[in-house]
Amino acid sequence: MASSTNPKWSELEKIFSGMESVIVAFSGGVDSTLVAVAAHKVLGSKALAVTAVSPALAKRELEETIRIAESFGFAHRVIHTNEMAQEGYVANSPQRCYFCKTELYSQLTDLADKEAYQWVANGANTDDLGDYRPGLQAASEHKVRSPLVEAGLAKANVREIAKALDIPIWDKPAQPCLSSRIPYGTPVTIENLSKIEQAEDYLRGLGLKEVRARHHDRLCRIEVGEDEMEFAFGHRQEIVSAIKKIGYLWVSLDMSGLRSGSLNDQLKLTETPPLKKLTLC
Image 1 (tube, helix red, strand yellow):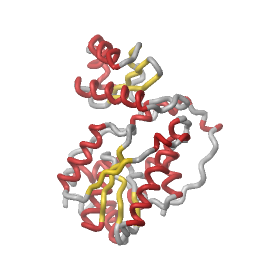
Image 2 (cartoon, helix red, strand yellow):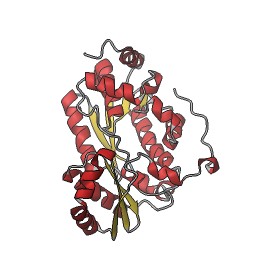
Image 3 (tube, one colour):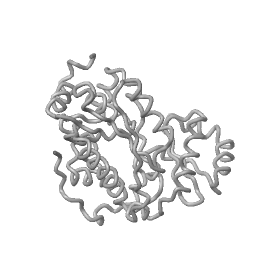
Image 4 (cartoon, helix red, strand yellow):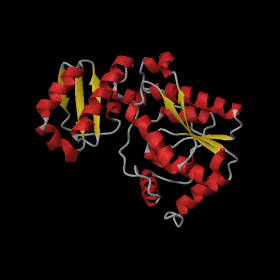
């Protein structure tokens, strides 16, 4: 492969060579895709990519995981998680992702036990370690491995290797789950998740590549990349009309542009109970 001379890719292959078998939490983003591709290349049929479906996963993301798995020929399974039954998740505290990942990793580790897979792995990279990521605590508690972290891969390294491997989504923008569009403290509901998904599907269909539809009760606050701001503003009348039909009363375009994790601005992290120190297997 074109990336065979990349020392970080070689390290990633070495890590998987040391695994007997693995289940990969496969969301369809570039990080988990690279992990799934690497696991398949090294372990073949002893690697299984698993995508968790819930109301917080956009249908377009599920469809992309299926296309990628078919393209690269790796084993892929879809399961259904039930984080909506978790009070801590629905309440949407700053620890929401912890409850979500606890549900996911509980199912994946149970599956690994039942079908004799040695490890469960995720797509966390080294850049994630410096962000507010409660889900990493859930990974640590379930002994989920992070091969990209173990190999020292940051997001830029992941994209470089993915491009060399002809992974078509090598430059895909981050796509966190739909719940991340809802401010902390506002309950997560299926109705709100559906409205967010409809809004973002419309905006992407209009031609916007990187976009978030932030849910603020009756207001939809749209974030787009700096280079698409003029395009969005030029289509403001049709955007407003379409978003109101989805069920919002007001529609705004955030002048700050798209900022991944911008809803974390409401957090005073110094007042947030610290997570336990992470131990990466």
